[in-house]
Length: 260
Image 1: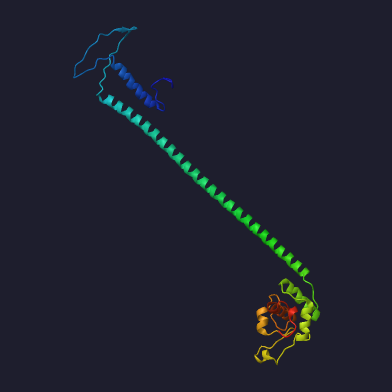
Image 2 (image 1 turned 120 degrees about the vertical axis):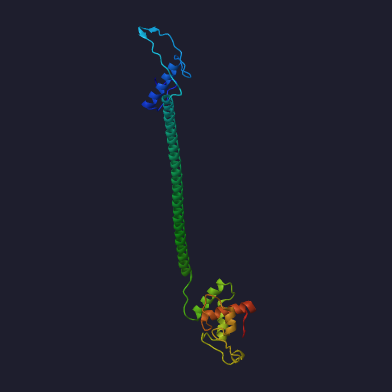
């Protein structure tokens, strides 16, 4: 029987095929034989077939041999079906395991990719920050250099002290002129930055006037300008604080022509 013949069972062993063939042969023979029922029999007249005598067969479906043959065929068919089922289950299990493995690998790859991206972003951010910090330091350094370049050098004498005081006053919008400062200095201290008044009412009250413009401590403290020394005897700090006080009370140091 060819592979394309209807009724052919794929995957059967030789013993399966022989058994099924035997059953088929017995079934075919039964169509031409007289079945013996309850001990009785039916005889047929022998006829000559091509010079030979026809052989009579008898078949009993309930005989031990027939039952054993049928059971063998059923068992073999069950074995073939079980094996096919087991192979299908094993194939499905392998496919499921492969799917789980592929999903785990995809998840691990995605995690690794995300970690790499995060690392790259952190590196780029750190590089950008370092660049910005470097730029900021460079700008501050440049600004400091320009500030130093713009700040003139003043002589350490009365003329230099007045000019430096005017330079600071201009930055803080404190009015006053060279002449206004000079005339009040000469009246108050004759240009002596260490001058001190120990006889007037301020001295009696324990807060003597000090410095070029004879400023008492409470006034110096209230009108001191940040960036100058916090010292009543410092000539520049004394002049700027006194000019700031005079601007607040009189409009300008230029308007002071007597004790203030």
